[in-house]
Image (cartoon, rainbow, N blue to C red; front, side, top):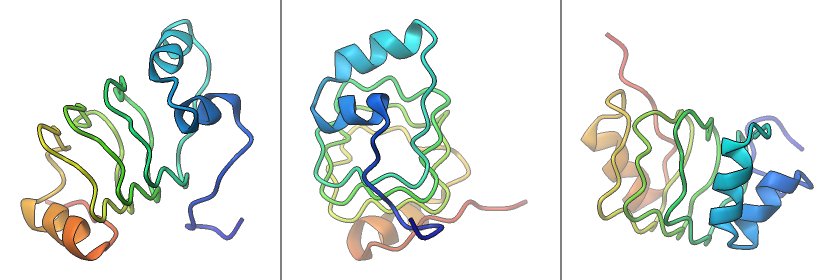
Length: 116
């Protein structure tokens, strides 16, 4: 895998998301199973209902994914792209400006965090 490029991994927790098993993912994560989602290909996935607290999605691709209603405020999204994703009701991290979110949604740019 090239650094910074999203990939499809063999990780069992990641595969649960690819298979649409969101409830099982949430349950196993709550039970303490480790999760690494940085630089992952999450394109086109239906992730509604995902407990995203504390997850690292940096440099991941969410192109055309269904993220509706997910609270991403405690997740790391720097370098992620949400081109054409469904984002109604998504709570984004405060570090992401509305302009960054819009550029990523409309043009696929990778989101950059605002620095004080």
